[in-house]
Amino acid sequence: MVSSYIAVDLETTGLDPKHDKIIEIGAVRVLDGQIRETYETFVNPHRKLEEEVASLTGISDEQVESAPEIGEVIKEFLEFAGNLPLLGHHVIFDYSFLKRAAVNQGLGFERKGIDTLKLARRFMPSEEKKNLKAACEYFGVEMNLSHRALADAKASHFLYQEIEKRYGGEEAGAFTSQELIYKVKKEQPASKRQKEHLQDLLKYHKIVLSVQTDHLSRNEISRITDKIIAQYGRIRER
Image (cartoon, rainbow, N blue to C red; front, side, top):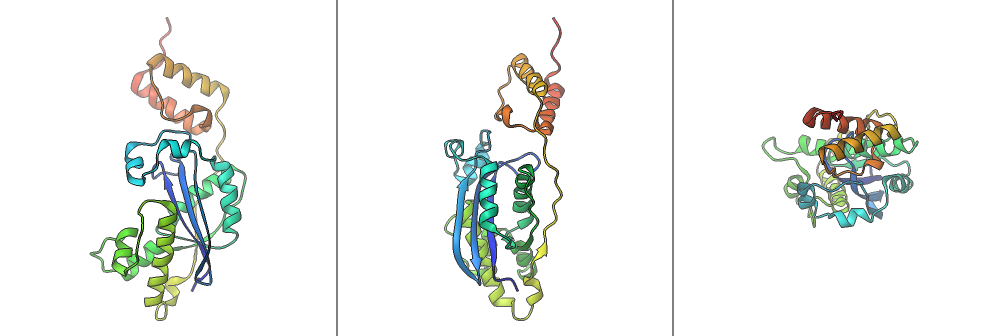
């Protein structure tokens, strides 16, 4: 059974690590079952937050606009995490965003993980909801906040502790860490020509983007350009 780990949770602009960005990281260093240190920061996604995200998390554009960029934050997080395994509720989600950020900075990030969602699915009745809030309620784990990174990281830690206390003796194998698998390549920056073409399209069609084009990768800017052309058409020669 694993008793030392980094419990982590992210808030993001959406659910797809290829398209969406981290806006908050919360993490707890746990050694021998005890919380030793916490880490918490907003992250500037260089885009406006959708109303649904702001409403769900309570995070505002003003809070993230003044926050550090992911390149700075990911280095801090990796130093905080050391070589410990990651723990989270559907931990592969958080790992995929973190690994993409690390790879884009030229950093390696291979980890083992413990997934409290998998534990909830194993030890809760099938008819019960298995999201973090529902699992905590079922196992009597108190949650102070929901959909805020540090609070959810702590909740995942206490949920793991409670499930392990109840079932660790008879099913110790369920509480081992497993390799986290997420393959990603470093994203290439957009070219000057790509940026100029997109800016021309935006001006021609009178479109205002919610993302800052200077911070888009080659694939991101290409995807946005193709979407605009498909919806509005190309620039007509006069």
